[in-house]
Structure formats: C-alpha cells, structure tokens
Image (cartoon, rainbow over all chains, first blue to last red; front, side):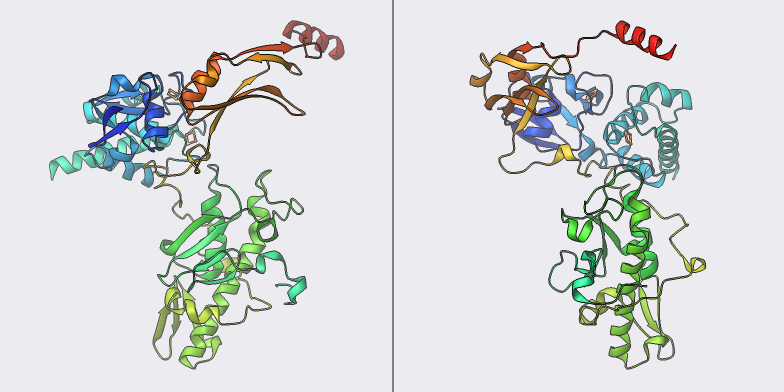
Length: 157
Length: 291
Ligand code: FES
Ligand code: FES
C-alpha cells in the first residue's frame, strides 16, 4: 500500500512502486480526469501538480509521489488560481474533444501561480509541453489572459 | 409534416426515450422531467465538433425551450429508434451526416412535444389551444394571464395524443438555430468530469495490451509468455488472429500490470506471407508507375 495525498485527501493505493502516478490515479484511485496520451512525456495530457510543481504523471513513479501534495484536475477548481481558470475555459469555450484540456488547465494553473500577468510569449513557453490535436491554442491563450485579468481584479477589490 | 399516425408505419423514433416515471417523452429524442429539465437524446457521438450542442439546438428551437433547461444525453445502442437516416438501418456517426440526417427529425420531435404541452395547458385552463403561446420554456395564455413551466405540464402532456401532423417554424422564427448558444459540454470538459471511452470502467473489466505484428500480414508462429502469466494481476496471455491482424494480447486488471506483462512476452513471427517491400522499393515502384 502506498499512501498518497490527492487534492487534500489522504488515500492508499494498492499499486506496485514503479507504477506511474498516472495509472495509480486512474486505475487505483478512480480519478479519471487525468488523461493518458502517450505515456512517454511529450504530450502533456497527464499533467498534475506534485508538491506544487507541474509534473508529467505518466513518467513519475507513484513511489516518488508518496507523502507529497498531489493536485489533479478534479481538485484544481478549488484553488484560487484554478477556479478562475476553469471559468475562463468555459467562457472562452476552449474545449473541443476535450481530451487534452485537463493537462492544459494544470499547466496553465502552474503558470499563473508563478506569473500573475503572463505575456503571450510567457504563455506559449509555459504551455509548449501540452499538445492539442483539435488545435485550441488560440482559445487557450485567450482563457489564460481572461483568468489572469479576473485574478488581477480580485486582488484590487 | 409527420407521416400518418399508423402504428405499424410509424418510424422507430416515435417510440419514447428511456424515461423515469413522471417524465413526458413523446418520442425518442426528448424527455421533459417534472423538475423542468428538458433532456435531448443525441443519437450521434460528440467528438469535439459541437454535435451535442448543435443537435439540441434544433429540437429546443421547435420546442421553444429555454437554453438553460436543456440537458444532453447519449442515445443507447438501439438502431430501431436511433438509426442514422443516411446510413440505412445502422446507428452511427460519421461522414458529416449528424446534422443533415437529424435536421427534420429533431425539428418534428421538438414541435410534437411543444404541441402536446400546449394541448395539455389548453385543456387544463379550458381555453382554445390556438390562444396558448410558448416562449423560452414558459407556456402562456395571455388573455387569462395564466402560465406554466414545461415541468408543471409534463404529467398532463404525457396523456395527450401524439400529434399526427405538426407545424414547423418559419426560419425567421428561429431563436437558437443560426444563433450562438453556449456549448453544453464546456463545463464537464474543463473540470475533468467528462467521461471518455478510456474512462469507462465496468465490473470485472480487464485491460488488454497487444503485441502487434512488425509487418503487415505477419502471423504469430509461437510465443513465450515467460514470467508474464505469473505476474501480479495478470489474467491471461493469448494469441489471436483476425482477418486483418495477428498478435498476442495480455489481459490484466489494470493498465500498468498489462504493460509490464506485455514487455515480458516474446513472440516469434511467421513472415512468410508478410509485406516486405521497403520504403525505397515502394518509391521506386511509384516512380516507375508514375513515369
Ligand atoms: S501521457 Fe504523459 S506526456 Fe503524454
Ligand atoms: S480539445 Fe481535442 S485535443 Fe485538445
């Protein structure tokens, strides 16, 4: 049994230590919001936060995540940055098929935590790991800008 | 106009949708619940093109529903009710047929539901149906200042006969068709709750990982499961052959167990009838043919 802390909740998974965190979440913890795209690190569909850092869960052994804070798409909406991001994603109607969007939002959230007012270049650099086969990149940019503005407005008021 | 209401000649979609007791479902594509939600049954898959927004647009317009009360649900596998009119008898999505084959069907389905809500209200209020109007999910009789929601009328509407003919809107009356409405799948696809095929988990379901032939037409000669069968959570290692493929499948309780076991299997291939031409040879042949 490996003890994990996922979205603020302590859970135990009966997985081998070399199991990628992605499959511990999906198959053992039943959290299917995090997606499997390639399993080899170049697509970003499996992005989660581990100890606050954006992490590709498909290449991270679950044993490495034990005891550390894990945030997934199921929990990011309850964070100060995640909530306006999800709202912006809906307002801009970013998702098409939606398969890549969990990973996109997790990368965007990691960006906004460290950079409150990202430029387009900042956005492109931070999001370059995440592929979208539907090609929603322009709307992703728009949604991140919208969320950054909402966060700026919230700080002022 | 709907075809004549003769039981045997009525198309399959005149059968109601799967519904809970108390729901009003005049046909396979719509269900009005007492809580005032209107569920549109989508017979086509949503793969990112906006189908689950576009299809309900058509029905909701003829129904004069309010967009906020619209829900969408995938149709069950049932070709009798949900066949693609452009695919003969088969139920299926593809070839840009979703909207064109559904267009008249969903308009008629929405208009029929609307007519039955109107008839129910007219009967309840003792007024002529022609004086009853519907807009944005509210049924109204202006002269007597009475109104009711779809949900309130669901029970009574269900007892009305399904109309044989319905009047469809003129294009100038469309409120959703041709106008922007919010996508119905945006929220679920922005918070991780949207269900994809890969997320479906049924009781006792296994994950299969496949070792495929390295060349088209190669077949499994023999395989060595080695340690794979004895690995944790692995159920079976089997060779398979179909008209188009041959390989070895590893079945396990979860993805990673199946993947690790697959990596432990070795396969010997029979390539006697396999396609062996190289890229260079293929290009050379192409040049010869194109010359
Ligand atoms: S699934 Fe992890 S990067 Fe593609
Ligand atoms: S929305 Fe389809 S892959 Fe990004």
